[in-house]
Image (tube, rainbow, N blue to C red; front, side, top):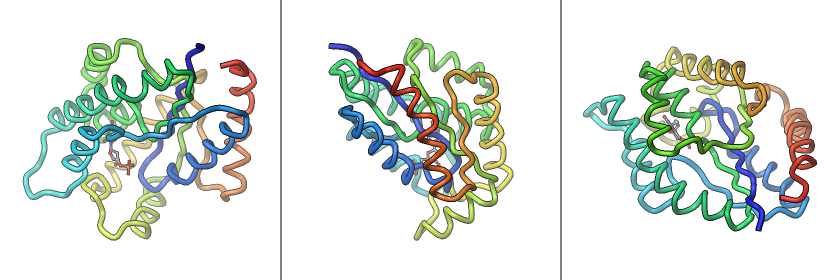
Length: 213
Ligand code: TMP
């Protein structure tokens, strides 16, 4: 059995990831792939409980290091219980956010040293990373407005300042700039049709390369 491919989808809150994931899933399934769709933080029962802790607004602050460790605790469970077994069974995994989000939010947003995140990543996951990452890029103020319209109540991350979200965005852009091979940057301020065309332009050649996976 050949290993499946691992695709992650990233971007600031309000960049439309959940909508675009459904379209990517359709493209993959139309070409005969069996797809596991999952998300971070979350994906397992424990991971979803950790997500609840992380996203619920609270009066007591959480230190950035604690936040990072909670996210990686959820990630280890997710990789061991869901992602790796799916890939080993030949399924494709489509994940809303993965380790890049830790570089963007805890690194860019919270200001943790990227070298610390990298050490933790290596310890927790070795060199395990997505085969392809689509980053949906949007100005911070636009993403925040969209998140505000969508949410009944803003979560702990959505309540952050525009400066925080802008640092997250810049961290994503810098990741994309430094590894053109794995990352595809997609302008999320375009119309839905244009975004779907851009997704297709990225996914189609990737599917061709991995035709027999
Ligand atoms: P979302 O899944 O609705 O986008 O919310 C998840 C939130 O968790 C999002 O605001 C970003 C945050 N997050 C991090 O800060 N670091 C991470 O590594 C991950 C996966 C998510």
